[in-house]
Length: 202
Ligand code: MN3
Image: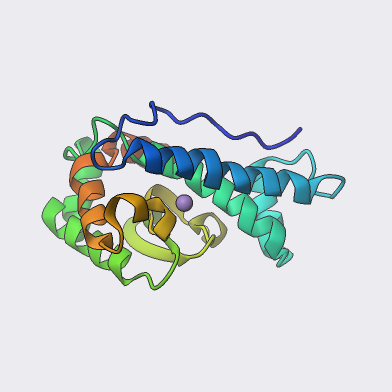
């Protein structure tokens, strides 16, 4: 069994004008694909071969096997990213997740402000996440390939703040890219599914 590159959940031009088809094409077809290809090369004939992606992430992290971990985590993070955005995104969260957002952050505007500050404040490459930690919502950032999966918290949604995610469309204006994500693209339905699944599992 090899790790496969999943298709995008929407056409490459579906997020325009906020994320161009060119950016999404490169990001998925070149960057994400390269992580998957390098991972498969690294795990061939190793103890990781045939394991699920999640198992490979946990085991390589524990073993400090950086070459495997970086590519495995990036493969997983990017699939999670595609689902964190939607052509119909940017609306307001609903139901229990909306209540939890309001309870934790005050209101949606305050959530957006806090998420934006975290995404802007991530120095260099990395990711900003909404997670559920011990039943409480938190906004966290991780550097490079790091993923909350190895911290025992449940990711609900993520934004990629590596320059390759936005440079073609926004150049150095990371703040405009973050605003577009928060107001036009963010997939609250996906976050709500992850939230409900974690509540049901608790
Ligand atoms: Mn990326």
